Amino acid sequence: MGNEDFSKKPLIEQIYDELFANIGTHNEFDEGTIETLKQMAHKGELKKPAKVTGAIKVPMANDNETTGA
Image 1 (tube, helix red, strand yellow):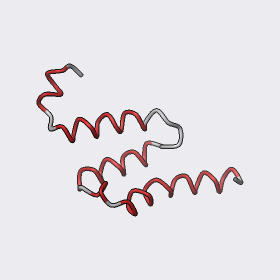
Image 2: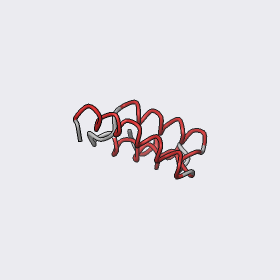
Image 3: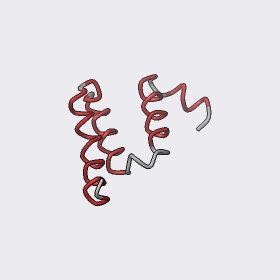
């Protein structure tokens, strides 16, 4: 994405785009979790720590159940 594309987006959207690109590089965050977080961002719910924590913990809890950790 070129600089001209960023200048057309609000700063908060640029920040979210970068955030989701960065967390997408970590194995701990599957595509479903990232999509849930994107939807929460769109609704303005990333300001609610309990909701964010819940969105992140659910897939990780499922991984622990299958690995026996």
